[in-house]
Length: 576
Image 1 (tube, rainbow, N blue to C red):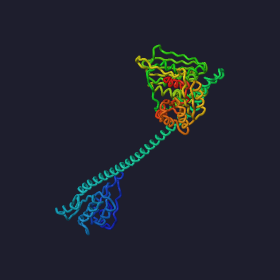
Image 2: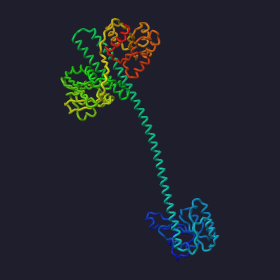
Image 3: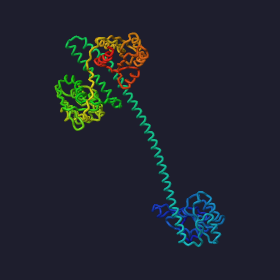
Image 4: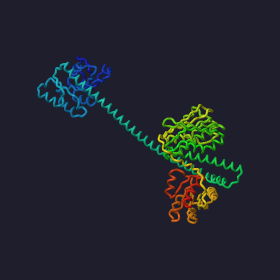
């Protein structure tokens, strides 16, 4: 077998044992098409040469074989688009070779064209087709017919090869896409796990923050309680000396400022977690603002500011939480007072605009630069400048204002011409359009007469200063007071003295306040006692736990002495 496709016709005796080799590729490669392999099998070298001459086309790569063995070897080594096979050959006929070719999986698909000069009977044609032939040509071969038939099979092979290549490329693309999808799925799963882990970490961090804030508030409130009690004792029993009165007022103001800082910090934390629930009712704006002015008046007067208030003559009704709205305007008034130079001017003006009311709090203070106007309502944001730093504060008041206003379906904005030009805060709130009478606002500072007969009160606190100062305060207004410093002592004292009221701290040694309250409530003699929790723990969850333990009231330290005395009067009056 030989691949010398252009062997000269005058070479009648080529070596029949030459190993098959491919012809040199021509322009077919330049056109981007791979040449088509065709195997020619004939025991006569001259016949092979004639066939090579007929099929000498650049797109064909011709292989020649002079025996069945050479043909089988070529079929093992290469892939062919067509086999042109002589029938009559020594050793193994073309029919027998075709039968072997069709039995092999690798070569079964190769089409075979039989060539013969001897078998022209129909039975031989039928036998040829039976062994897998696709066509049957007689020698001498018509070159045009041969070229035409070979071209058909060559094109069919080329198309089949291109389809196979396209299928392989498609399968590769599908496989790659599946691998990419699997990688994407793994990345998504990993991302989802990371998001879940991160979310849980943030939740845990948020819980730790809340626990820290609650603990911080508790630890800060506890020492404030005896200070506030001591100030009230000084007010009741202290000498009428101007210096003492001044010192008491300073302590009282600073303690109130610190209490408000703690309350603001806790409020912002609760709002951010959605824990604050507004107690909405029909309220009159003028009363809300008046309550804020009264709370802010000591600071305004201390700085010598002039406060100008202008309201429309008609009543303006809101659907809101009176305490929280008063907190909004108190923060704005305190800001104006703190960030204005002494003897400044503060204006609070309310105007009705359609279905809204706009309340303006304007000052002639240090002002706000354009760069800081956007961030002034953010948590812990403070205006730059020595004056702002000297005024202290955590930078949470305006953040609290914004969130409380938004909880009332309103909005707040700030205007300022720049540093040194003052500031104006505008609060816009929806107005109720009907004329129903507003609910009364609990002022919380109404004085009550001291009852003619005293109460028996048990004070329980592990902070001895707090317990002693509260005892002195309650005794100063005519009550009989007993003291205990731990939970077990509280139960024993309650059993021994049978007080009408027990003021019980929660965080006690030996037995906490919750367990002490439950123990007292289980006794017959303790079922009618009034149990009041007095603690630095003031979150909603703490109040719920107090109620479940059997407490009648929950008061957060430092407790306002006047509020406590008012509460005791309310408890006692029905018994008189």
